[in-house]
Length: 117
Image 1 (tube, rainbow, N blue to C red):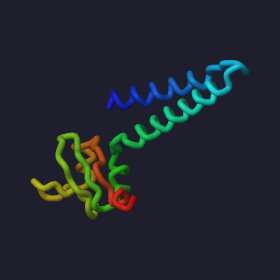
Image 2 (image 1 turned 120 degrees about the horizontal axis):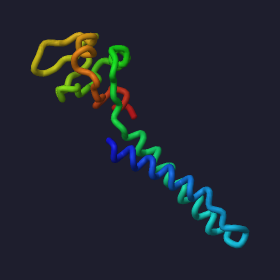
Image 3 (image 1 turned 180 degrees about the horizontal axis):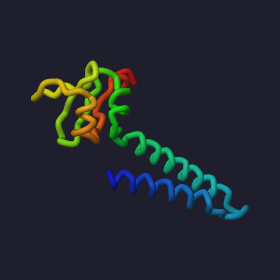
């Protein structure tokens, strides 16, 4: 993820530098083009930020995930949240509080809301 973070930072910094440039009254077209480039860099950084995986680190964050959400825990196991438990294919269901104690942080791979977007 450090690479994505670096790209976001670089895009934001370059956008600031482009907006700070003042070519003077003699070249308003250049200034307009640089403003458009800065806007594009900001939109790119916004898209990168939205593509970051969501990470849960507490039982409270697990509890607000809707049923049928899919997580990958710290052990790299994938499970589905259902009725206050995480269902892993290789085990019996595990209570969210136990998952929080032993298997967080976890990456949210899917939530049902994403299917409707």
